[in-house]
Image 1 (cartoon, rainbow, N blue to C red):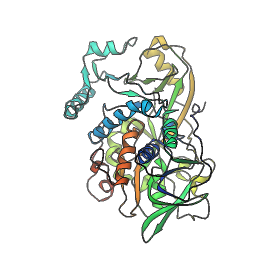
Image 2 (image 1 turned 90 degrees about the horizontal axis):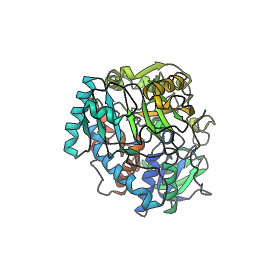
Image 3 (image 1 turned 60 degrees about the vertical axis):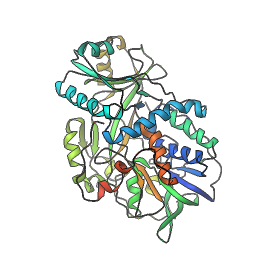
Image 4 (image 1 turned 120 degrees about the vertical axis):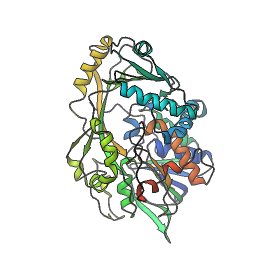
Length: 446
């Protein structure tokens, strides 16, 4: 069962000869940046090799949360929640955003200690999370007899609908004059005297004063073509969506056994028995030393293997392809990354769902899918100008938690391109932190 249908976005006929900003990538990071650039009066073209939101922006849990974020991301996520809350009224689109809260519960004293430390730290940012006693944790998970010793709740966090939120924002951007070009891969950058002056697409050239690369898992390969090193690799994950089922929560619940997210159609996105799979690839091997500290800290949540991604895909070895011919990601099976879901997720997940909430016994899966998560060594994105190529800006490496933070990331990228006062301090998102030889900071809570 494949991923549910994603809302379609209208294509614009023909390519513009020139724009102020060309955006490479039609996920949440690129689309949100295009929206804010257009609000500032800039002409923008979104160039997407496949379809808007067809990769990770539609394959995630839909969570929009401050809770348990790395400290470096908290200010940007707070801005994102403000944006999410106002988008429907501002644009007239349907994003499915709602602040129904998120709850985390546990049986582990060590986990409680980590959450308490996070809550204590986050008070400095006026975050809204609070610790739960054992009784409060049980009350927050009605119908579940998990013998919780406590938990943490973030009542102002929420979620949006992955299958329609980014397409809705793309349509809002089109109303502001942004042009959208799907199945239009960018083969490379046009440069003049060492400065980026446009892009070369499979349909022709577009002049641009600035280019934003928001290519998700493909960003590393694209940058290597231009001599820029980006420490990024991909993790494969699997989730599934159930058919409509009784309501046991309006929001999302994390437990040690299973994570569920109530969707607008009455079903649940479920993550259970799901260890992210890291496949050995040339790209991953190149940056293994940088990823090692994070990998050690996440050892129990990942598995390893070798597959076709060693030879084909974002982390495969790719040389300097010609702009006159297809780039590796123009292959028909690469236009949209659609990895096969792990076979050991759906059936055990449904069994655990019934065990955790007897009221959900008999619930069936409606769709199961896999996705490639673009990850950095410290699990914090890069949102920054690329000094080696003036005129090029980057927004990538969201490490599995980019959907919720996407609107804020788009605003920050737009501010950097415009030369405006950044919505938050951009220093934590510099590329240099990953490549200048200094110790890479381990990720905080993610």
